[in-house]
Image 1 (cartoon, rainbow, N blue to C red):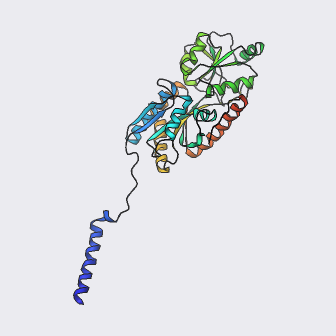
Image 2 (cartoon, rainbow, N blue to C red; image 1 turned 180 degrees about the horizontal axis):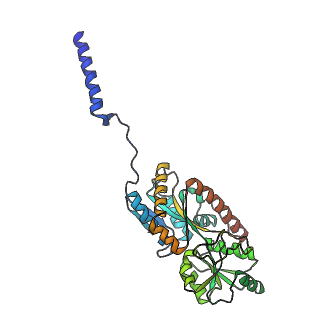
Image 3 (tube, helix red, strand yellow; image 1 turned 90 degrees about the horizontal axis):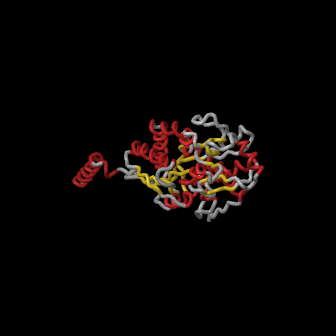
Length: 329
């Protein structure tokens, strides 16, 4: 009996020593580290435009923070639908992110995809910018009121160019023209041709993102008559807002990040931290100062509230113009 007790005591002692000597056997496996490899940074528009230039710079900044490649990939088509569908169908692991914009609201409400903007999880907002109403530099209209008077004298004749039907630029033009009481022809010229249509005289005016107009304005090739936004822009401080002029028309262009639905919270928070650090980097803030967009990061909670607010604006404008065709299932 004594021998049996001695054996049991010895076995117990060995087990206790082993537990301290080999703790790996007694630890709970940890979750895989994120990121575990390269991240796809999907841009909804073609190379060389404002969205592409900003997106590539932000991706570069995020790569420095996350210590992995963040690879910009352009997937244009259907007003952003190609990108948002691709990211929606990706694995919810944070390794595929969409460089979103107001297009995530316009493309879902005009019926380009069978889902709404909440079919993705949203990391946060990076920036916003106004979409100026612009005419050619030597056009006879010096003010928005001048254009409105000319429009009212010849309703249905003046052409206002935008990026494409149902785009943010189109909706901003609809809102502004409705506010000033103008009946115009909305010309969906395409992103690459939009500015050219005004310079050539094919269109009498246009709505475009501020970043697409700054250089042309400084060269006096176009003239900005108004900004359909809340406040004047520091890069173009002499351009009044539509509200200042007595017209209630406000719709900004925003940009941010989205991922597949169901992405773990810890991964989304890590992406948000990297996004904010990259947005506040010297390189990105320098671009903002030159181009006029406002760096105004929002994390998921605030961004979700902002998206609901902006989505309501988009839906109201689309319904008034007969463009609303949501195909959400």
